[in-house]
Amino acid sequence: MNYEHTGRKPLDSIGEYLSSRVALYAVLLFGVVFYLVPVEAAVMTMFKTDAFVNTQPYLPPAPSQFSLDSTMTAIDTIAPGIWNSILMAVPATVLSALFGSLAAYGLTTIDWRGQVGVVVLIIAGIFIPYQAVLVPISTFWYQIVPDFAEFFVGPVLSGWEYPVGNGGLQLAQLTITHVAYGIPICTLLFRGYYQAISDEMIEAARLDGASAFSIYKNIIFPLSYPMFAVTLIYQFTQVYNDLLFALVLLNDPNTQVATQRLVRLTGGVQQDFTLTMAGAIVAAFPTLIVYIFFGDQFAKGVAS
Image (cartoon, rainbow, N blue to C red; front, side, top):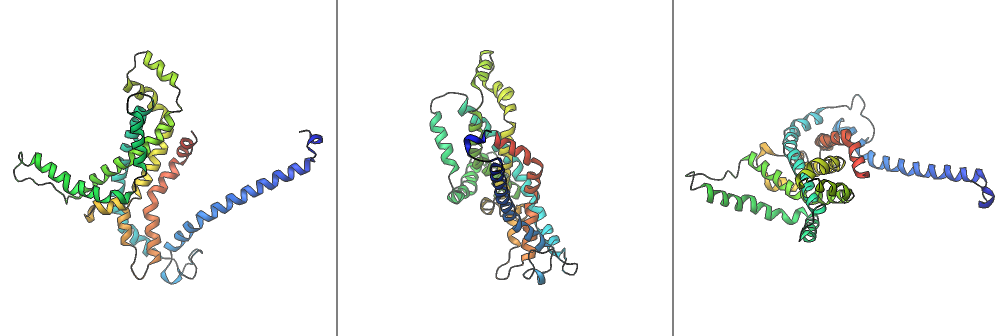
C-alpha cells in the first residue's frame, strides 16, 4: 500500500487492524459465554444435592455435594419418552424433507398454471401458529377420521370400532401431523436452493428425453444433499422439541414423548431444580448428538 497518498503510517494501519480483531474476538467471547453459562449451570446443578443448589449454582460440586440421584431419576423417567420421540421424529423428519423437496422441484423447475398461488398458500402455511390448529387437529383425528373409517370399514367388519385410544395409532397420528406441518417450511427452503441450480443442465436433460422424475432422481436429488442436511437437522429439532401437538394427540402414558415426560419432573409450588436440570439435559441429549455429528453438514448447507 502507498501510505504517502493515504496519509497514514504503517504502524497506524497495524494498530487499527489489531484493534478490530481484538474487538471482534471480544464480541465472540461474550456470545460464547452468554450462551454457555446457562448450560454450564444446568450441568453443574444436575450433579448436586438440593442443599447446595442455591448457594453455589455455577461451581462444580464438591465430593460431599456430588449426587447422581436426580440424574438417575431423570433417566428412568424420560428414557421411554426419548425412544417414543425418536420413533416419531425420524420418519416425520425424513418424510417432510422428502415431500418438501418434491414440492419445491415441481414449483421451481416445472412451469404450470396456478404455480404462484400454490407458492403463496405454502408460504402462508408457514406462519400458522401451532395454537391456531390445536382444535381442528383434535377434531380431525378424534371425530372425522374415526367416523370416516367406521363408515367404510364398519359394514365389512361387523362390530369394528376405530381404536381411538390405541397408543401406537396416536403416535402415528402425531407423526403424520408433524409431516403435514413441516412440509411448507421444507418446501420453501428447497425452493430457494433449487432456484440457484442452472437451468441449462435441466434443459439439456429434457432434450435427451429424460422425464421429470428421472431429472429429479439423477440430477436434482444428488445436488440436494447439502439442503437435505439443513432441513433434516432443523425439522428433527422442531419435531423432537414439540409439546403442544403431543399434549393434544397423545393420552396413552406408554407412548408419551420426551417433552411430555419432562413435564412430570417439574414441580408445582416447590421446585426441585436438580431434577429439573437433569431432566432437561437428558431430554436434550438426542438433539445435541445430532448437532455434534452433523453440524458441519448443516453449516455447509446454510452456506450453499
